[in-house]
Image (cartoon, rainbow, N blue to C red; front, top):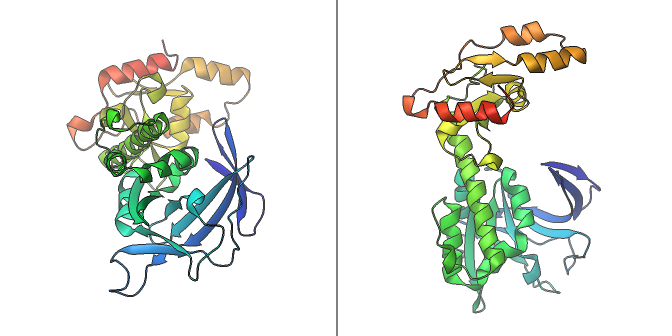
Length: 310
């Protein structure tokens, strides 16, 4: 996801891009701080104080309004329900979330906290930065879970990456939100498992330096899964080269440079430093410590086919 700032005031106007999606956003954001003195507020509660901005929160048909908290120690956001904010603030306006939801978001990308308010419910959603777009796109659906305790429990289950019986969830929008959460959580868990398996080394050049990503051998869009054996840890350069079919990994774990891709680059006169690029590659990939995490041979074969290798 990429973001362009349209101003430097509060609220801030953003234009967010992810793939072919473009969203206009108006963002109210404050730091999350402890909820108050011990014995006065529940232990582990965090909150934002809605200060410096007159009510009501601005909303419009051409942009999405976000009400966010930012927990600096963990780098996790908390999203609150814009629709529930009153037209007039009280004496000390604030919204709350529990630290347990922040911890869940650290582990899986999402967490939630449902709080009873005046006989109803309100749900706050914690999310990691790489789940930002998923939160924005599912914002209204996610906050609807506040209306039903049973459905809110199903959402919590999904946020922990556990299977959910979607028959328990009545609204199609909320079912879609759970599907997106499960997909995002699965990807987050996939990343952690793959990078841990390879000890944060690039499988093709062994670099670490926090420049390594988890790459799918068979893409999810081509019915690939989030199993560790469908993953390779690759640095940014070799991840891009792998997805563009410049380099490939054979079922016997050898690294190859595509003659077809090289010929195309030669025609375009774009082979400068190819020799150095080739010399920086291992003959065979750097394998995980545990054999059960080795890339699956059939997936490697399928990955080559999908990328146009003969």
